[in-house]
Amino acid sequence: MRCNSVRRKMHLFYYRELPDKQQEAIQIHLRHCPGCASEYARLETMMHELTQSVMEPGTAAGEATWQRIVTGLSKPRPDSRRPHLVRLAAAVMVFAVGLGTGLWLSRRLSSPTLPPPEVAASQSEWSQYLGDLELLLLDAGNSRLPVPTAAASGERAVSIDRLLFQNRYLKQDSLMSPEAQNLLEETALLLQEIRNRSASFQRDPGWLQKIIAERHMIERIHLLLSQSSDNSPLEVERAPVI
Amino acid sequence: MVLLAKSGDHGAMGELYRMHRPMVQALVWRFTGGRGESEDLIQDSFLRAFRNLASFRAERASFRTWLYRITSNCCLDYVRRCKTRRTHMEEFYLVDTERDSGRIMSPETLADMEQRRKLLRSAVTRLPAKQRMALILKHFNGMPIREISAVMKCTEGTVKRHLYRAVRRLRREIGDQLPGDTHEV
Image 1 (cartoon, rainbow over the protein chains, first blue to last red):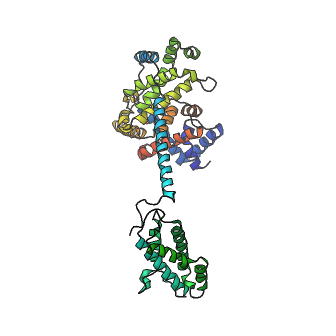
Image 2: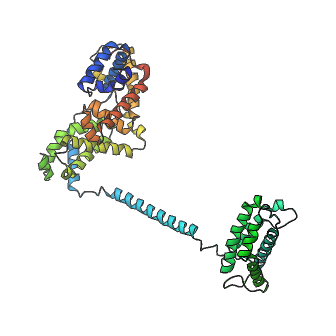
Image 3: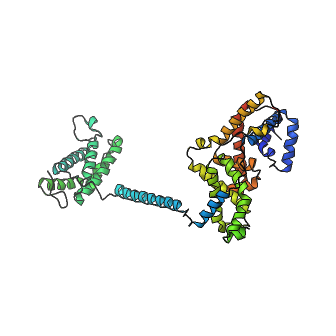
């Protein structure tokens, strides 16, 4: 037997809790290993002193305690489960409140049909966006490279980033018409695509012209712009705020 | 006797109390250090036992083991209630120097021994409750590990682990202060 193994089992050897074979093996090891024998002697001493250091109970008959037990037995049994029930009820309540809050939050956060109620874009903001969008699409359609950022645009005020920003802002308008909403969705995707393909734009400008033509983008913008300039609402039920 | 007590016979319960009180008292006393709460814990243990006698199954464990389990649970609950366990357990291990009076020892030896016992007392009070319970049941009550596992409702391996850790911790705490020879100084 190895020393490590002997030392790990030394306390069980002391308490004679090992199988006979192991007891014998450790006994033999201790006879031949001075280090383990010394360690075992220390353990024995410690165990002895542990025994001696504890005050033993007196031999009181405990009749007074028995009388209290009898009295306790004759009393109606206190509901020992009550604390557990209270804890369980509290846990259930906390869980229910947490679940309710979680559901409410998840519905609120994930609901696409509940835009902020007080956001209503003005007609001038719509007009500006549509005008800028038309300008950019016409430029792109004429094979002029669209600029991704305003900082890089120099003298040109219209940039993809700015249009995307306006697009995000206008999407919050809770009362816009379905047509305006569709155009916003489509143009957001288109602007993203233009931006992603800007590096290869000059090599293949035809794809954008094709999309603009197929989807009648310019016509739709003109239609919305005319509605805006005629003071006819872009919104479904509400007159535009200018 | 247990069957009679189960039927609600207070006389039989009294007999069981007198028969098993020394065992319960020893465990509680060693665990709490004989503080004022000891009698309350003894009372609580017996009350719990007598009130739950209907749930006792003789085929599963002996009445003694079952009562040990209830007492052990009462003690562990007591520790949980005592937030300031260390302070409460300060008087846990009291020295009974009378027991060594039969031996002839030099004042230096006595002083060393006293020092070591103080260290041991302090180390035992800092043992986690389950390790302490396993150590008390094994070391002071001489209970087999199989029975301790039934009392503490855990496996024998867990009891051995509790014991190993408890002894190792005590051994570390007392450090090199133990003499290399046996206790017969």
